[in-house]
Length: 351
Image 1 (cartoon, helix red, strand yellow):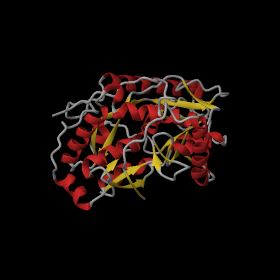
Image 2 (cartoon, rainbow, N blue to C red):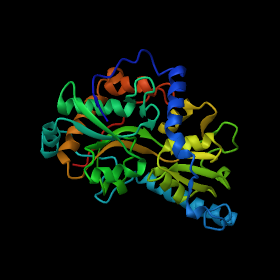
Image 3 (cartoon, one colour):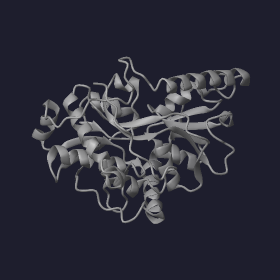
Image 4 (cartoon, rainbow, N blue to C red):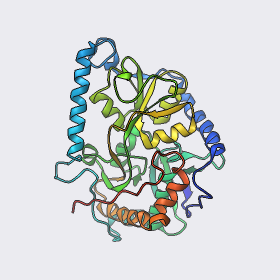
């Protein structure tokens, strides 16, 4: 599918409004319903008696979870330092130079971007217009205008969570802008821009649920997350006795939660805030238990494109309350995020 990346429309006030949320939530539920009718794909380690499963001895499981939590804390203290000694979120210094990757896009005449169509307020299909909209999409349009001019052609390819890296490595897309966390493991496979948003893993559960967060209240319960996500990594490190269910996209988890097929969801709190806006019977519980940066992902061979995107991000973040970043945040996220007045992340570089 393709579209034209015109200027970001004015917010018309902060947020989207309850009516728009309800309509979009219903539309997204319909998009996902076919997938959620199938039985969930349970992780094999969730069978009774397996380590970390509801049938394992409670003391041993709690010890495993404590060890995993200590490992996560140690990793956080090291700020995810990668093998080259740089922080995970550090990227290449910005440049407007047009190297091979930038020229390839310009000669082709359009930008091909991997996005989501099911992440409400980030990358989702507007039920009124049929267009894909959201915070991530505003950033896509800013990059496209910089590369191709004021009325750029953009080809959007919707890809599931676990296909983001294969799509880049196979050159099916030029960029992935899809609430993708930057970490050292992923940096071995793809390149990232500087950070454009900060988030953390958190638990989403029904308001009536006894689940209180990423803790032993998950013991014996079924928890959903997207395959290939940092939520999956966190749950494999220490699931607090929960049974793990993996799905292609995070919206599938919300629908399964609504259908009573799972008890809780683990996902980025930035995504979960949008899910809670779609369904007021669910809420974020506990505290974030990771700190993560979203970046634009690209093929590792496209160094000039990485530097060009970082230049766009410098402009996107600049301007304080009048910056494109702030305008986009106010339009899409201000009404649903716990922090209503954040600052954009500062860029970090490794060269």
